[in-house]
Structure formats: C-alpha cells, structure tokens
Image 1: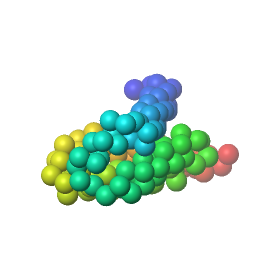
Image 2: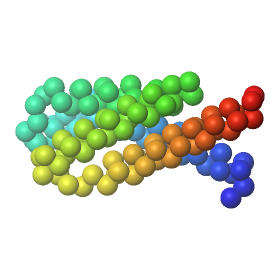
Image 3: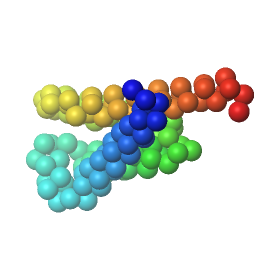
Length: 123
C-alpha cells in the first residue's frame, strides 16, 4: 500500500470512529429511547450519563490532533467498561465495541510510528 494512501486511510479511520462514537454517545446521553432502554435494563440511573459523558469527552479528545493519544487511552477504558456493563447484564453482543477498540489501537500505532519516524529523522 502506498504510504500516502496508508496515511489517509488511518486518518479517515480515526475521524470515522471518533465521529460515530461521538454521535452515539450524544444519542446515549440525550435520546429518550436510550434513556428508556437503560431504565428497562434495570441499570442504575447514574451509569448512562457517566458512560455517555465520558465517551463524549474521550471522543472529542480522540479527534483533536494534540490530544489523540490521551483520547485513545480514554476511549479504550470507556469501551472496556461499556463491554463489562453489557456482559454483566447478559448482553453479550459487544462486537462493535471490539471493532471500535481495534480501530483506536490502529490509530495509536500509526501515531506512534509517525512519532518514531520523526524522532529517527531528527526533524
């Protein structure tokens, strides 16, 4: 794969995941259907706003170039706890969270490789 195409693909992946997670988090925080679904699931009322709020903050940090790595780690933590909450409540369909996590890891690996190249080149 050409280097330019790889760079564009990883940046597009980061933006796609970041925006999708941001939109879904906003939906989780404010959509009445999500509020009712959480209530029906028997989850404590404080979990939904805590999870949604932390996802929103992490997604924004993930999208901002200077805070991408911090946002990446935060998203991974949020995805882990979201998957844990789902599994503990008998909802084992956490495949989307696994795919999001892998996309975040790819983005992190790309940033790390880019940083190492710059350090190696001395620029």
